[in-house]
Length: 312
Image 1: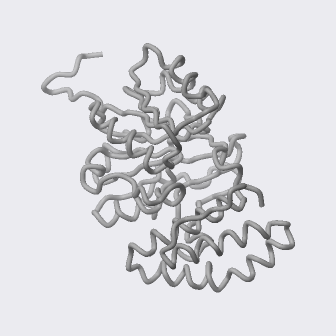
Image 2: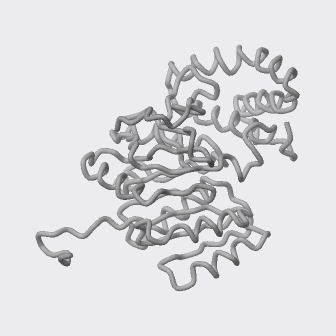
């Protein structure tokens, strides 16, 4: 292969950014999976882990092009991811790839995203088809925003991976589970809103990117698997429902988007009694109440006070 020269540009430099908080064996497995996937650099941000996962990461990454940033406490995903993105740019990254520690990439994932990025220079955010842990059903093929629960719908969620969602296209938003971020986008709009402790920061970032003229591009040839919600104790619990509701309202309060506000009032507020009824029947009353508390606290401008336990 010829060396890069005046007529042969160097390939883009991509840095993976991973946030770890007591990730245990998941984080170790993720780091061991990365070699050979095309990353020129890695920044791991540890949020005050106490389970030994940060020390295990140091051992795994010894001798690699990597850096570990260690926070003394859990500063939330958005703030930790920002630390990683800023450091990745300082280390010369052209693109940052945000990767959950419970996600696994196929070898073709990063090349497919970079090829799409080269074709579409205004695509500031790019992500592929994300499958469930078994690799047989779709978890997310891009995100639609509007008249859905939590104002967002992961396209294809729960459907068999039967050849659906195979068209490369612009979408409303993309999940931060495995997200390629162009350097020019970060330089134009900054990083995640750190007032969003966890959840919805990727939706907010996508909206800000689109406001600035960048696109969110879904690339089906880039495939991953994901064990959803490992860090927050599962998909439906009181802590998670409170934080999603609280941060969602924070996002809305920053925007004058009549469609999203209308959807919020009709589905989240007026539709909450129906949600509560369904939750009672399914033994999830506490989570439904937590969701209402999260919405109300954010609307009133109160500090977040999520439940201390993460049960239903």
